[in-house]
Length: 456
Image (cartoon, rainbow, N blue to C red):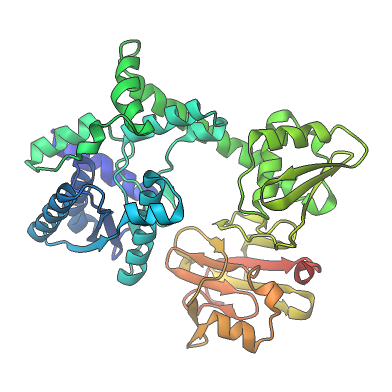
């Protein structure tokens, strides 16, 4: 098998693992003009006809490198014109924005990129935005996280998929990418700042990893194996924690858990309600307090207090801030998506009668399992959200107002969706495209709000 065929076959397998069915989907490449993104655009363009998807591209000019940035933009424009790919070009004065926000140039540039990707995705009805992170990038990230003192989750490195962002060449090394570009005869541009070691990432790439290769020439592969093992461990712990945390209403005795489960349980319970990040010092302090029968308190970020008593844990927000509804994939069984306040039960089997009791904050619906595309997920409502129910395109905000859903509840009403859009919203109903009583098997969804949901 030659270099080109082997590379494209590997990327095809990666795409099908990440996205399942790509027919009639729109994929967009985050195109910088560098070797990695040119490789990604080229291989996706080569696979698009076979897998029946359409390729778009977006280029963000950060206005950091003057004439060199303009050169990169011109290169991307010419490349996309030659490949007949629709390209969106975004100009953002990142140095000025970073100064105004008091952020580092690196952080500001990253935020600008991903915000631009999301706007581009919505405007062009893109299903997946593809970034060109590769195995070397992942190895650098793992090493960077280790040096910063991250826990075991930091060893996972870069995820292959996060929401609508996918990374089809994450398993390919930079050497393989360059070999593919050479074989297909594609040019690329080089960012001169990649050689400046003032940035931590560049120092790891240009100094630390080459030095590590003197000890282990396969250090890139070794760090990627470590990343994969950490991901497997995280999956195991999530499965082990799910039945424990789904009993949170009945006050789980956390002090009975092993240290590894205990720390992960604390992080997970906090993340269900708040968007701030817990540091190891916070988690360790809570773990120590769990030993005591008396009530103990630990101050956490965003003016939140963790209160422990005889092995149980609860969070008190001194600002009265409401718990956050967490965006996540819904699993079969019980799912808590806003602390103890919202429970979603998912099961598969025969179609069943609907139960909609808004006064008791309980809603139930049966959807045609065969019509659900990809994963069933949940998120908070967004500006402009709408979907078709009973042949009418319904704006979610207007429906909440018309149905007299309390303002204190609206941000905790779960928006349940699949790969093609919204499928069910309590107080409103199920989308026409998935609602049926004639399928072979139903996806039965029940949403239950804690009676205190409107009192926080």
